Length: 387
Image (cartoon, rainbow, N blue to C red; front, side):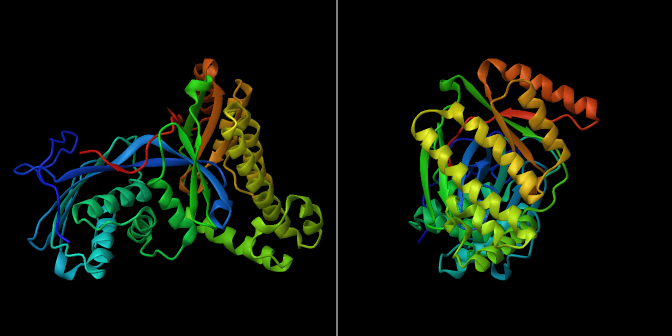
């Protein structure tokens, strides 16, 4: 396995000197994404509905054989230099840590990576937060797969990206989330079955249906997605054990009332949410198959209030955003990606998008919250090579 591909067009947005003399061998990107439905049930063998967002992380890479790994963060400046011979995944912080973990994994599997220059950038909104590790690691996995002719399929690419992100590929739910990064397609949502490790594209073109999907970053403090997911796994796993089920997705909706009566009070809310959320995801998939995206609205709102009332997962900023959007005529809204600071997805008729946006900004200003960052969530492409 040797590096393939050389040269390439200039990349003016990668403003650094790594490629001043020789251009990168290629440029790869992977999108940020947002969950429409299926949280946190998508992290315990359930179903989830995701879309890729137009914003991307990009990686320009040039392999070489000088025994050095150079990682430049073009977004914030600074270059990390690591010796390949002594490389360990924990030898760096920030984005460089993920590059180091990926190269360490490749070398451990026999891939002769002897050095590389990597420059990272993207068109994500500027802010203090890090680049999304999932998008970053998906772009990197695809880049090294192409450059070294590894021939990895999407499943193995997802495992490699998962290792680079968290130092482990053993979590099937997280791996299937990484798999989504390579399966997203423009104009489509993606249905994830985290038990089976499969994805299925579903048509979702909001503008063509006279709709607009808004992504509202409420700028709340992150509470740690890993902790939320760990607590969810423990709670739902215990409930499934008490009910004699492999997982809560095996509890039929018709059996829910009786099952709740068999459980201690602290487990009833999460079980109620798990069963109804899986149902909402499958209902949403059917609606998209039928070409009825506007009917997703009540499912989004139902998911938001179920997450709040049955799981205690909520934020004042998110509830404010949901209520303001609905009052302005939105069809539905819900808190998404709650562990990373929180986004709210809003489905609105296109003709009302401006008034919904205005109402959101006014409501946040009156409440004394930082102004939300609002973008259009047009379903976009997955990880790919750009040049």
